Image (cartoon, rainbow, N blue to C red; front, side, top):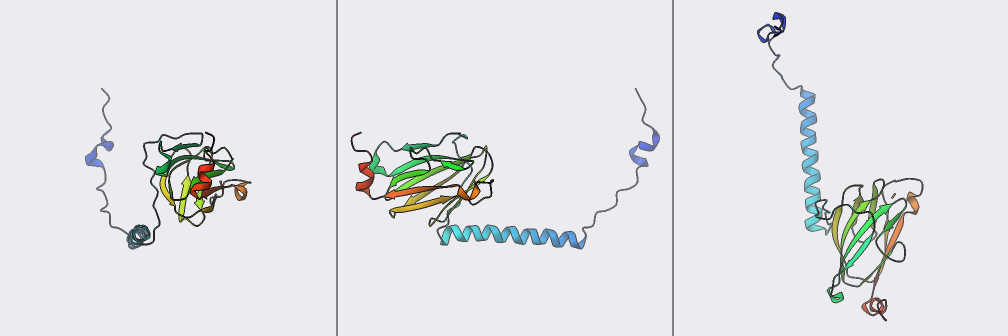
Length: 185
Ligand code: CUA
């Protein structure tokens, strides 16, 4: 069995220098605490008072590669689950018309969003919705559309040469017009 050389034995090590935090270290830590408390409070106030919804990344939907629309069995429920995939440079929302999701007025969209390549943004104009599409992760938010109209979806995270062209539209249709889509089915 090898014997340790005497100079490496603990009793021969110099006594540890007692650590005293530098004043700059204390300031940096204090500022970090103030900033994170401010951000947390701002998010809390925005979500409780100003209708800003905070998405979650904790879902039981595993990452997917194809867009999909899952309608409730009863169309009158007006609840639709949408699996959306951001990819260079479009949003695949499982719709037949590329980048155009059609839903009825008063519909609640339970949106699950992921990305096939790089990080993209998902902002719905006029809806206070701001999500990130992250490869390997699924972000989730439920959004209600009470007013008919066209809601543009834009990528607001620089993702490559066609970033500025990366968009889609959510068409919120009056009931009669929406039901016409299913005539003859
Ligand atoms: Cu996708 Cu910018």
